[in-house]
Image 1 (cartoon, rainbow, N blue to C red):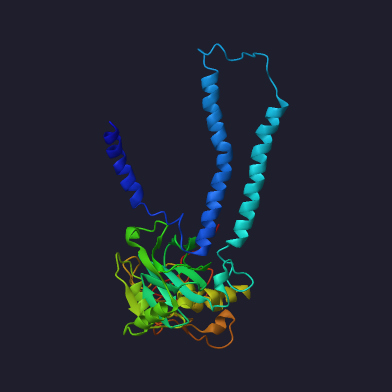
Image 2 (image 1 turned 120 degrees about the vertical axis):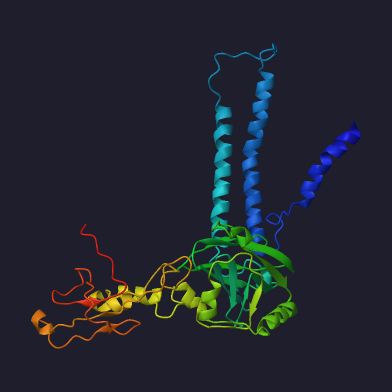
Length: 390
């Protein structure tokens, strides 16, 4: 019988031995602090949960119907001592949890830089932080090292005990950048930049992945994170620089097309402004960058005169690019007034505003009424939508 019990517990032991408790046994100091926060919070809550569960079983047993020795007090209704215990213990635990959460929120803020004066780990010292620009693609991860002018796909490395400054964005849909051994997860969103500051304290190979479902290729959206010593990291950077592949805007446009289970790629050189263009949604030539558009809006916008500038702005990543997820490329050919402008009260001729192609005059395609001069005509392959009167 004893031998049977041992064999019955063997599958459970094998299952537990195969588990990777990386969240409870991390290698990065930020992740370790987050682990401690979870453990302490759980212990504080168990101070209430365990006695309540134990007393529930005790009362059910002691005051069962068959126990005639239990004291019967039908008129009992109040106990000051019991009320003090019931209310004071949870109140004290809530105060402790609140203080712990408040301190953890500030100390473990992902935007809080790790460095002299603010370091959460003494090993950070005066080391120059490593900058890494992260782009979540469909369905792969791109890592750009601006300090070294190189990049890698689905592979990330960092030196041990050196602070890492991540700048994170996405090319299409929302994802979540997560390396459990290093730090907590943080979202990657198109047209927005999030930050994460972390530090790895033990050499090794760790897993990183997306923790936010993003489509059919989500299950293969993972990468290897290498924690290396200084010499090992410099050697790894050397392998990237030795690669003949280059990552410019044209190569990135091809790379961002949806693909699954993409192997590791390394790029020996990277366009210095690529991440800025990805973040501002203007990698494709002719598209106005979001930061330029916001600067124009901050100064009051452009009105009718800004139509040629506004047309190339599109927040659909695949629109006008001929991708499988969007329509074929199209252009506004011209906006002009071929008739005599003096009849409309405009002094002098009107110069056509060209976008991408030669103006096609006389086609008769109308602009929306809120943009059209009473005596103007236009030629457009891609007319603007009619605004609602509401």
